[in-house]
Length: 173
Image 1 (tube, rainbow, N blue to C red):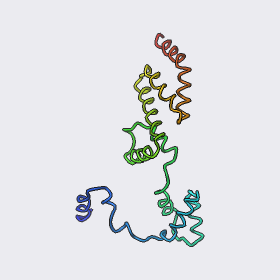
Image 2 (image 1 turned 120 degrees about the vertical axis):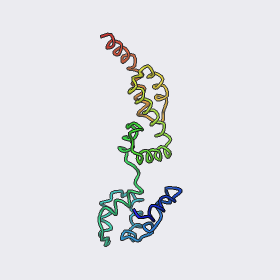
Image 3 (image 1 turned 90 degrees about the vertical axis):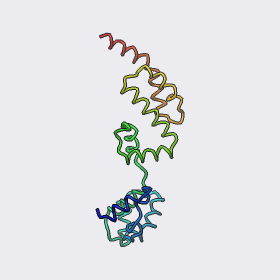
Image 4 (image 1 turned 180 degrees about the vertical axis):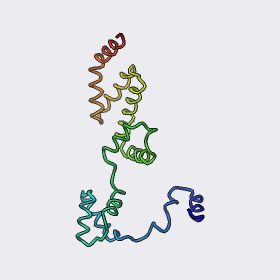
């Protein structure tokens, strides 16, 4: 790194200040096509390959990477990614994943409740605290806006005595 780069980085008071400079307003070959891409995105076309084909027909000379990078800025995370973030121990998540998960949870209170329930269940299972199962079942079963954990909790409530009996039998063997 050059001395000027080091000085500008050291003077930045916020992360946003790191992203200013010569590259921010630089014109690209994609600029002329961005209004069209935004319009098609709002109409529901979220496939970067299809968008590339459409602007390619209009004369766009560059490749897929630029289009993918542009649309990925507005692309919400996939359900698979959010699920993985929920099921991964918070200490094992990459910082970028933590930031995205916080943003998702801030925009969806139901998902925040679900995340807390999943983490509480995972903590109970990994720390072998099965005695806390009834305490977990009650609020999870009452979460009417979240059908999956509610069904799971009701199923556990009905099989709980059977599970407890199996656990006791296994402990005596």
